[in-house]
Amino acid sequence: MNKINTPLVIVANGEFPQNKIPLKILKNANYIITCDGATDKLLKNGFEPNLIIGDLDSISAKSKDIYRDIIIKTPNQSENDLRKAINYVLTNNIYKFSILASTGNREDHTLGNIFSLFKYNDSDITIYTENGTFNLMNDKEKKFNSFINQDISIFSIDKSIKISSNNLKYNFNKSTINTLFYGTLNKSLSDFFTLSISHGNLLIYQSYNEN
Image (cartoon, rainbow, N blue to C red):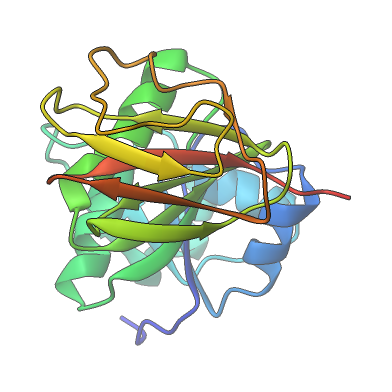
């Protein structure tokens, strides 16, 4: 297999990006990994994969034949193709990369893909959707670049995490998030906001600045 270069992008088999921001990420990639049937969507949009990973149940026979030398078949059904691709990247000691097309189509796949980030809390992975990004906050304190009225949502799977914030419309003061939705639909009040947490990780959504 060819050597993995960065910036690295994994393209999942959800809705192929149309927004200019994730498309720019894809255009600037030095290495593209596609998840099974995402290969055909990538080719249709004028890009080529450097590596294909999956159980090969959705890629076309034509693409499977043409790119047979860069395919890694992973039949293990305990993980979906996106997590198989992530696991492969991490075994190659690359911990910062982007994921595209992991949302859209089936809502259950969308939720599963987004919340998979909690599994990789030692990595710097960004999911780009059509409207914004998802990142895992791994530090106890972090300053986020933002803009006024940016949509912000915060998700926690640990109800005991105490959260404090600055520059959000609805600030936290050593507060906890007791459900998956209580930290959603917030707004930034400045060109940055800060979060501090007692322990663990938070999943942060930020909408794009497309002005």
